[in-house]
Length: 368
Image 1 (cartoon, rainbow, N blue to C red):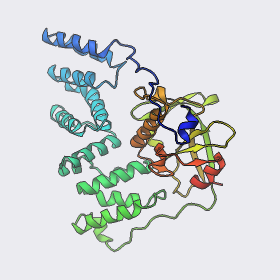
Image 2: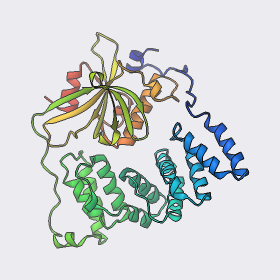
Image 3: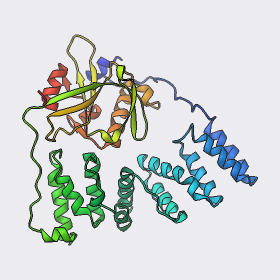
Image 4: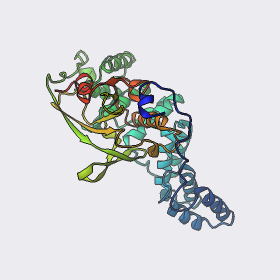
């Protein structure tokens, strides 16, 4: 079945799109783990550590290698040498939905090192969310401090919203301040403001206030001014080359190849374009500015399926359709971006169709 048939509502193809790629560079990780087991039995821990350190240069996201490297560093009484490995392992466990394992390794890390290691905000939020699911509210609150005073004004809105929700759920001392920072952002999606206000109300009803908030208890919390009446779109055409845990590699044509942090993405739109003159294709916009901001210029990195095949980006996918859906779902999960035209359509369930790119830009992005 062709891409146009699928985009038009045909049945999903059942044939395999290609075999999974074997690991490259540094040898087979499983065979290496067997060698490491033998070295550990022989008491050659330093040799094992060195081999693992070398292998991680090629297989830096292999969780078994990361965990084993950490374990050996602990055995050698040098846990500081394995901090980066266990931190990366925690990140991968959180992104893979294994919250209990991530929590276990986090507390093991705290127990083994003298100073609590610094972790990026996205990982802190994910770890706190996992702790809340495990009914560890106090631990989550401690993880989310320091709070509002350390917030970067350039923090992506999606991450800020997640931080506020987690902080309020954990009853963190800075929760209300963080929530107010969300409500003061001009790029707040519809509906989120009411949700945050309700969470703030619940927190305040339980006495969760800072001294500064108590002094201005009656001050209303309001959204900033809305979007401008007229605004422009700056399109950055790109071809995706690879996607890892927190960044995407792009071919920008004459500008060369670049890596972009997925945390920069404020919104993700995916629509079907079918003008009747050529086979239908999917347009994907990675919006770098919020559509609900007061900015007059909206920047977007634009991907087009007529320019790339999503299957190499999702090696486990069986066909074009599943590869594209998985790619979009993964991007939304990592970026926490606002999905357009809506959460289902943005991952092709089903795509909204437009007769031209211009029609999509006017109706969905509301640009001139």
